[in-house]
Image (cartoon, rainbow, N blue to C red; front, top):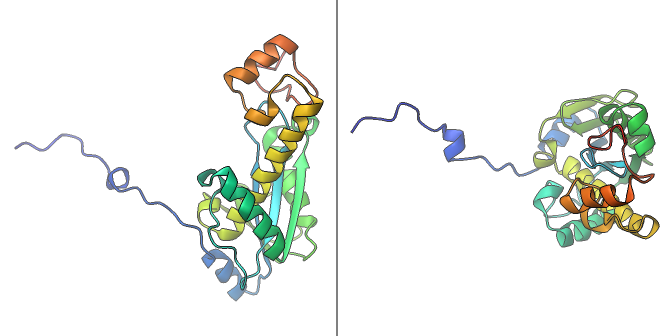
Length: 218
């Protein structure tokens, strides 16, 4: 039997599912760069609401079981882990970038600035920071390292992703009462069909990012 001209890559046939651990943090600790803060964000993509960033320094002796990329967890699991992180971490800090700041600069710059504020806000000063993604925020008070898919590789970054996600979801649920009719509690500001229909009917509100399409030029 003739072999197919193109064969699927092994990575496609057997995808590797990463599980976050403490190995990156342990490596930095051996270099004398402890405490290590994991840093992540929630809300870069929505049409409305802030970007929320979090920095978390975990206690190596009390790492909550089940930490993972917040997108891989149910809302119930995220809420449970959120409480454990706040109770057991050495330090947690949250910072936001408002829609106005996002529109004034751009979402990447606003996100990185908020990440730096989160690290600076830690009650326990970080000796190093590991950041989800490809960019190291300017203005960090310590050395920083970008980690691609960090929330699936580092439990500290995973913890930060959970804190940021739960905090932002709660903020958008609260916004439901102040901005009636937009459905923020349901879609958290993302560009769902229901959200786009509400914008068409009501026009944009103060939470909308006016530099994002389709709001740009409204």
